[in-house]
Length: 380
Image (tube, rainbow, N blue to C red; front, side, top):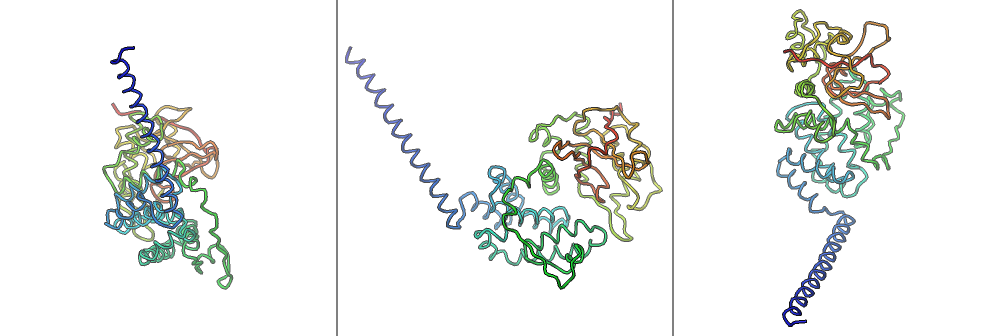
């Protein structure tokens, strides 16, 4: 073997040895980093990514904090720090927009952070004591105002107050049938161990809609359904989904006042004589959305009238119209909404529609109550 060839072989052997040594050093560094992060968590300190979320929040950049915290939760569903600052940022946005949906998400995120169980979160509370008390008082105020018109939602909010703040109010006891002098035992131990349950498909869709409320640069709901959830959405159905998404959170007013946003669904679809938001408006809302999307729409205020619109569909896609029966199968009563997806485990159809609990929102309905699915055609 020539000297030149020997030198080449020696050169490649030397490079291989150095590469192996570098990889060993890299493995050691990675191990040290992991061990350091583990010890930081055990000591109740924040990791770098958690500290970054905290700094973004403390710099009053709430939209960015929501985005960073949401990304952290996607990668690690049990990151309680991310949930904590997601809750505080969502409440800050609620203070600007006064949308009750944002407030309910605040409570949900606080519970997911294991607010009263995690020692690190309890330390963080000391700096946020004033804001957390504002959340407490706002919950009580909303419950007092809505106790009569929305009993179930009030109970859910007061249940959250009892768990988060150990505050079982007299109103809560009254609504669940306890006497004021009776004590209410609230246990939060191990209640939120399975954080993944908080992020069902419905939660992801609702989170997307709420993100659009506070950030117009977000992708549309139809894009989210296609890109993130892998659902097939027709181009015409995408239009009605996205138009409906712009109305998310519109609700009836209690008392003598009437929401002009609800009244417009009647006025702009040929029902000028309607001037009260108590009138059943699911069909008018669907007509308004379909008209805006350039689709044919029903001229009737009866939900079942939509069974005569468009083409019958056996296997619905997001954006198709779904009609449910109410009270009795053979009665005239019903509900019409936009189909999003079906949860076969719970036999529920999740829909985006109007007059669902008095507002535009995502809500589940029993699949056994479906009268039919329709695919609405565009006006040519």
